[in-house]
Image (cartoon, rainbow, N blue to C red; front, side, top):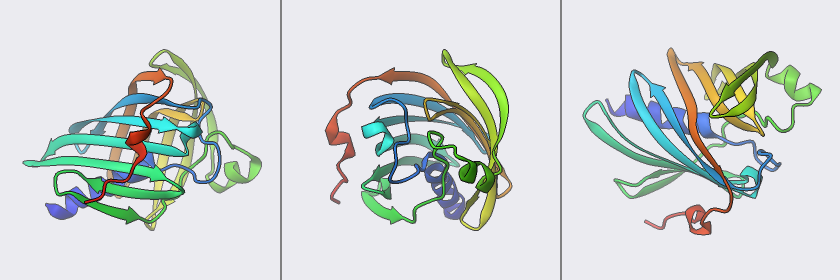
Length: 186
């Protein structure tokens, strides 16, 4: 069971991993809430971001298989940290490959086999829909993403025999508290 929880935590990081070193969002700062369907479980997360996505914190608290997950993923200074709030542990994670939707040049489109697939409205935003393939942890993940201003408003990710659907349910643009992006010292 611990292995399944670890896989779920790693998938959470992979789903929220950010492209490093460049502008990843078209808006400077904000907060959005997501609902994730992961292995038949509903997981609610809150994401705060600043500096056009260079700083991002994702917090998730849910019960899965009788265990409580109180996790976070902090992208800061080009690194990703998995935070286990319940056990007071922080672990630097290998940087996961991800798509910077704000920088879709020919090389990126070819590398990830991106195919544009129309538009749809998510949380009141008109999103560009595209499909792609991303290599994560030695596996190929197939992703269908509906993107607005670089923010994946809805993703359907299939990897390692699992499908995760994540949808933004609420989005607020504007300043966020800088203390959110401070790595806990446990």
